[in-house]
Amino acid sequence: MLGESHGALCSDHDLAMLDLDGVVYIGPDAVPGAAEHLDAVRAEGMRLAFITNNAARPPEAVAEHLRSLGVDAAPGDVVTSAQAAARVLVDRLGAGARVILLGAAGLAEALAAEGLVATGVSDDDAQAVVTGYGPDVLWRDIMRAAVRVREGLWWVASNSDYTIPTPYGVAPGHGVLVETLRRFTGVEPVVAGKPQRPLLDETVRRVGGERPLMVGDRLDTDIEGARNAGLPSLLVLTGVTGLAELVAARPQERPTYVAADLGGLLQTHRAPREAGGAWELGGWSARVGDGSLSVTGDGGPDDWWRVVACAAWAATDLGTEVPDTAGLEPPPPAAAPRDR
Image (cartoon, rainbow, N blue to C red; front, side):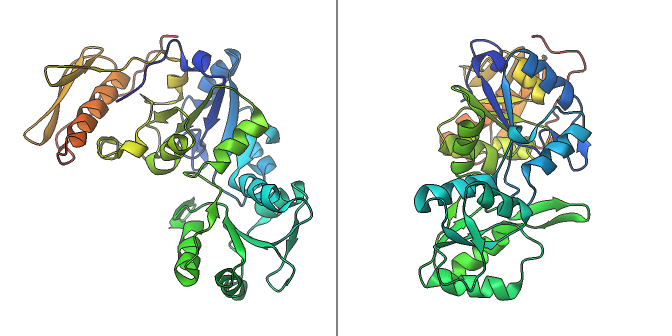
């Protein structure tokens, strides 16, 4: 169900690949305690990489945002889906290849850094088209690119995220355009961002690390992406995943470890054990009966989430419906410093 670590995760793994929104920050604000936890992790010798499916912002802009929140970050610590897409392109086409660009500055910068030539939709010598989120991309260019992809031009997409956070609410992301082009052309693009593995592979290539760990808040991108890359993962509960999402996680979306926040990197993780139909850990006992999930006992909040996850997943793996969690209240986050 869940994995166990020999020591603290920051000792067992030498690289943490950190998703950003929901993990390090939420919108314009830092996740409480994130900067302090990351400073402590670095002090233990763990490398940090900040990875994002956002192909619009160059690494320097991402690093500047992180620094403004008190998180130590240099451009070289940031890896974007635009960089991963550029790597996919240059590995197949080589430096100097002409690539039609439908995207923003971050994607243009990534292509140039790999020696690729960004060009327009009317370039007959283009060998591929690459797409990314770009609010200023013109519909007439999308139309022309769609026709060329349908006629056989190779297509790489930076990501397939359906939504993006904005100051005015959740808005359509690049995935909406990807789906539109996919339906029109009948072509599946090579996707560089999570949950596909190019972004994670590019992160390890750039930042280094022999024992990487993916850290994220989304099951269908961060955690599934780690599984696609054959890597362990830590799910933190500071973002979009709550009780309902966790208990309903499909096998390919299940993390190796679960913790309330980035302090989980400083913990030694234990896995619940099954006993008499219940899953037990740290004073908690969770079981599924008559279609409902129940928890008894007392203990730390992280262990509560762990027994809940294992009990629910064990039940659904046997073919039952996702258990009802009505009336189940997670314990409040621990206020005391974590045991290192």
